[in-house]
Each structure stands twice: as C-alpha cells, then as structure tokens.
Length: 265
Image (spheres, rainbow, N blue to C red):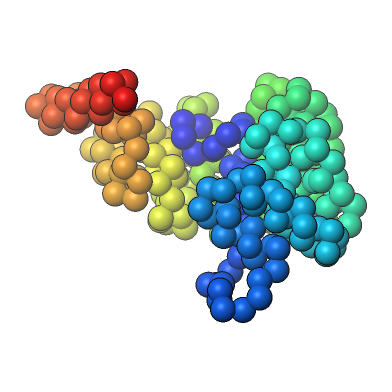
C-alpha cells in the first residue's frame, strides 16, 4: 500500500491520548502529564512520566502501551516487546497484540506473528483488524486463496471497519481482481472520510483501474486534509496521463521549489 500504513508493514501505530481537556488547575497524575509531554514532543519527559505512572499504578494498560510505543520509536525493541507481553498477560488489550505482532513480523518471525493474531481473532470476535493483518501475512507467503478468505472474514467480523475495506480493496487492485477494488475502496473512504492516507490509497486504486479523473479527485481530497508531497507527486503523474500537462507542470514546479528549499536548509 502506497502510504496508508505508517512505520510498519502490518499496521499504523498510534499513541493513545487522553480523552477530553486536562484541567491544569487540578493535580495531575503522571499519566496525564505524560499526555501533555507527548503532545508537545517532549519524548524523554513523557517516558519518565509514564514510568512513574506504572510504579504507582502497574495495572494501567494504556500507560504501559504508550511507554512501549515510545521505546519502540527510539529503537528499544526488546524492552518494548516485554511491555506489550506484560499487557497481554494482564488483560484483553488488542493494540498491544497488534503491535507485538508487528514487532515479530519486523524480526522475520511470521509464524509467531500469525499465531498471536489468530489468538486475537478468538478473543475479539467482532474485530476486523486481526483478520486483515493475517490476510496480509498470507499474501506475503504467497497464499492468495487464504488471503482472500481472511480478508472476507475480517469484513464479516466488522462490516463497518473502513481499514478492512481499504486493505482488501488495495489487495484486489494490486492483484487485478474483479472491479479492481473500486467498491471496497469507495466504501472505505466513505467510512474514513477524514483519513488523508486512505484517500491517497483510493486514488492509487482508481489510477490502476484507469479511472484517472476520479483519481485526481481522490488525491485532491487527500491533499485538502494533509498537504503531502508524495500525494502531490502522484497527482502530477495522473494529470500527465490525462494530458493536463500545464497543470501538472505548475504542481511539479512547486514540488521542485520545496525540495530545493529543504536541501538548502
């Protein structure tokens, strides 16, 4: 998938932030303080606050999960893995299962990742995520019939999971299946209308299906949410395919200027 997935091949990793505004007039827990540090980019301070939170409340799964992500992002994978495993041993925590499976995949332990995700399908029967991640693993192994079965199991588990539709649509598109993933892609962006990478991926699906005018619209929707140079570059390619070279040249000129400014800094 072109840009829909950040950092790992298995799933986007998102730090869980506290819900609602924090009233700074009240005494804060270390967990609340950590959220503020995360939001302001003070990673070292956030890590220390999360460690303090876990000393006070070792049963705080979200604090341990956030700490695992921070450690993973700065390269401490063994410690991150240990924290995910602790969370899983303490209770039902799907994000920890997903991220641990991601770590196993990065280490080439595909069988271990698959077993973990299979256990998640039994624990979380109405969640699509473990199913479509298993499908992506099956695709990596070249097991295309199994991949299709697993994608469909995910959609059955949760028909309203936009990412399940998007992953299957991308698979259908890349493998030239019936309708090239257009139906599932359209369903995905309807469910995930504010997701810029999702619109980018839908644009890719439309482009592969040679629906270039609709592809332009999808890339523009993505750019309206998040002005991204990779999406602009894809837009240039599609505009040229449509013969709109003047418009493509204007966008390319802006991209070249941005690249030059970045290099000069």
